[in-house]
Length: 133
Picture 1 (cartoon, rainbow, N blue to C red):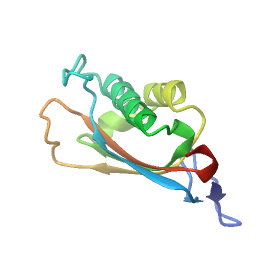
Picture 2: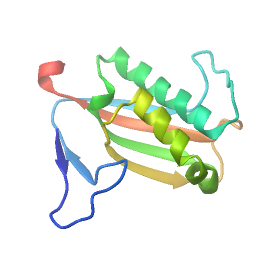
Picture 3: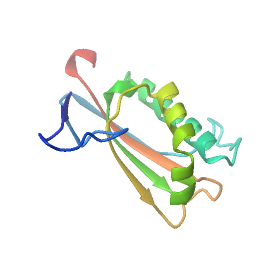
Picture 4: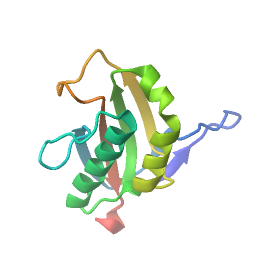
């Protein structure tokens, strides 16, 4: 996996501008902040992020993939201000679950998510190197 950082560009914080990778592709659908039984345990934004990230890691594990194989994350949030207001707690949850691996990321504010109680939905693409497959 190679991080793509054009010369002279400001270094992004918490994500990468681009990644080049080859291997087996693993796609994880949008994960919300509910548990394995489809139950929400919190309406706290950062709490839902923590659970959604754990759900991502659990699905990746089914494909023998790990957080460091993630090359792309897309975050759908229903409230940009709530997302920005929880940066510290989100960062803590991210580092606890994903580590210090920062793939390409996009965050988009949407009007609503399909699950009424969900405040965030995160989907990922991972590339597992051939040696790890």
